[in-house]
Image 1: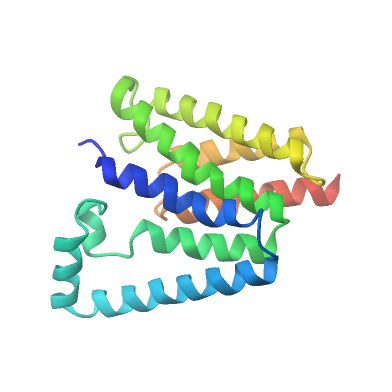
Image 2: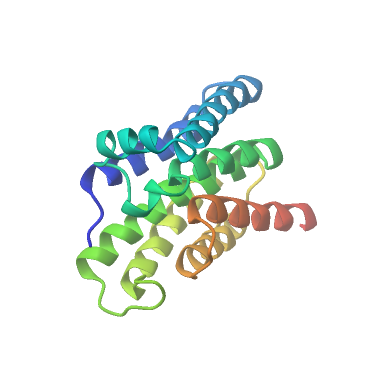
Length: 195
């Protein structure tokens, strides 16, 4: 089943909002805003998952961006916000931005290419073509960010892009909106610290 167009747009725009905002606002202000939005989403998840009526309302009004299975578990946006907060708390600013854009851009490109052109299915309906597109887009993001980052060398960004692609591909039972940025950002941080 193809991903809904509005969900794709939400994934790109919503997923890129805080990483792009990080270029323009101080870290403290970013963390306050991100913490507030994350808190609202977590409170909303608790309310809807514990109240069938609220959950039905959400499913009917937000069906253009929700996956069917998200009716009964936290939505990908909540996982992404938690990952964003953790990334900006624990990683270098440019590592955080890069690892989050790996999700908002790389994961989206993997979905679009995989759904349109994917033939070689690998894991959980992920395709070789989608994964290669994810890798290409993550490498592009990484190379662009390494050019403006004072701390992230191109080799670090390349390793981050490869790790993000592998995590996105593998059938890990945790939402990739959480795992991709935290694992790829953690690996880039580790490489920077030992360089």
